[in-house]
Length: 340
Image (cartoon, rainbow, N blue to C red; front, side):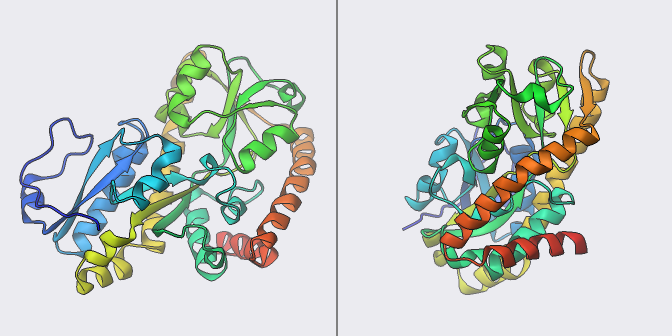
């Protein structure tokens, strides 16, 4: 059973500062486990926004505190299921074989920003993807995706043909599929290890969202940025919660969280923060000496679209195999994004 406790003082060294007045007034304090660097927007903006929404919806009766380093990224789902923390963020691609339907939002070719994609993702999950019950054991609080992932490298990339043979850090899921389709040698390390992987020359580059240039200091170790319109993939994330923790809250507070925070409201807010990170990182790249930006040529875009078509077909087949109408869900994502 999940535990709650009064928060009377701020925890020394906490990455997130919660006002003492709010904390002392709260009846329930949730423990958030997070794995990104303290300065990354996940911890600097996304979790604070979630806490703000929770406090506002519950009139300060529920708050939360952020803790870093409780477990590595792939272990966060189990951490929450076990009740070692109340909430966390997971990247679905870190857990090979555990999630299939989540790969649908990762596909390249969607038109729109992270906010639009995150809203479309939640709505499609609610109608179609939840039927696969892949998050069994935890409560899904929000679903979101970063902006289009791009190629960041130590040496300039001016043509898609140059990607073949490169050692690239890629995530699991569609990011890994696209890396293989391009002929790259995939190296899978969690995002917090990207800087040292590139600094040690263990990889030639990395495929990550634009916001990583600031969030993971890629402007220092991957000075060259190759942009594919629409991106190479989008990453799939979920904010999750321990089921007992939620069940232990009074019914009126549970209803307020369901009505005002969880689901589409939180997904939209987090997606917008991802977009802000992209904008900040692009500005930083332009302002940092030695950094370059290359946009894919029309010929490279056509070549990429041909390659990605095979990956899209493969993912739709996988999602169908999970008991979900993949084509209907895929069409819904595209339609919802276009309507934003």
